[in-house]
Image (cartoon, rainbow, N blue to C red):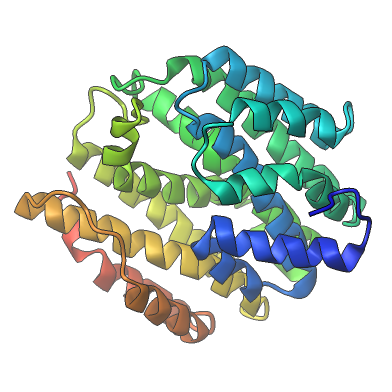
Length: 323
């Protein structure tokens, strides 16, 4: 496809299409948002996905990852042209097996064109997030090993630069588009970090076996599974409290956040259940479960009581392991 095209509709069509290819989950959640938010949140996700793709490339040296991360950041902030990042990145990832991610990298010019059609406030929020994520993850490129991270502090730092900062981004974007949301979150912004970290900790626990197979572990080396599940549960509590603060009139935002939260709760609870029964490996949620939670968001978005009840009932096995 010709990435030099400046057709806004074609760019948006590409963004929607590639989102469905690189993430079935976010392709499901992001369209729940109002149209203006759907565009910028989808755009931000794709940019963050590039940073993840570089990190996950197991055959690249840490120095190469750091160079590509910096080059990508420079292209986002306009220091270099997008093509100045695309060509060396595709060359470095010549053995990468995920064709959708390679296609996304090739079409970064189109993704950035969409970003530049967003409001100045939204562009600044996205650029800040990508900057923190790129620079933060670059610090961890040299720490990738099967031994894991050194301690809880380093674990939480990693979860912040990978996902906590995304929680901050979402809060900034939602506030830019809803005065009611901005007012409701005033003084509670820190919960947004917990929201993002809860989702990331869930992914780390879910993907531990796959990560180890490619020579890396993002778990703290001296912490037990039970300890990690306890920490993740407490982050889920912060995520729940974050969602409860979202005004009910912002129904799309509530559904978006609840769906991601609900799937994380069910995933962690399944891990806890299998740990207590000593069954390995963990299984991903079925498509039927995902669509059931998706449908339930319509009800949960209107009721704080239902959100609390869902969390209580869906985390029973998880709570049994709490210390």
